[in-house]
Image 1 (cartoon, rainbow, N blue to C red):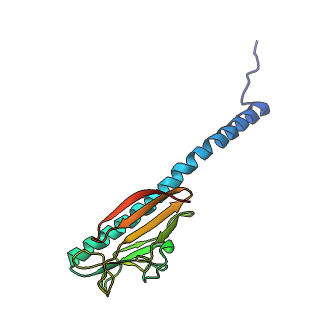
Image 2 (image 1 turned 90 degrees about the vertical axis):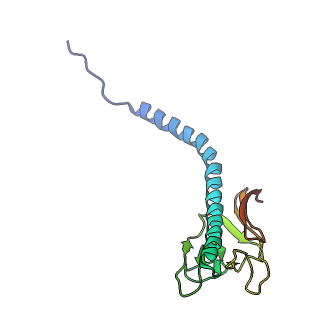
Length: 165
């Protein structure tokens, strides 16, 4: 005697699985938002730190000034760090590094002394064109997570954790 075999799932079983999956996602998704936001902030701060360090190293290696500045087009300094940044050796050389804008919902601001750019001398010092020492920090924020990329007067760069408002 052949008994009918059951294949597949009923509509009620399928709907139950979909409802439980939706509930699980609803509970789990907010747990991933904060780590992703922190990773975006960390990545932006680290990329800026690396660009500043590259510029300092290049200035020492070339025995010539190298500039890091905000750039909207990837070729010229614009002072707008939120659109990306470039590392420029003396003309006519092309940029050593072009970095795109930070990820969405990540803000980048520079203190007044660094807003127009950072210039490293052939000796590795951060100095303005007039010879005054350059120092300050860049603030990278997303939500409450933040980092300060600090430029010391001697040209040393470090990243500090901060809480944003």
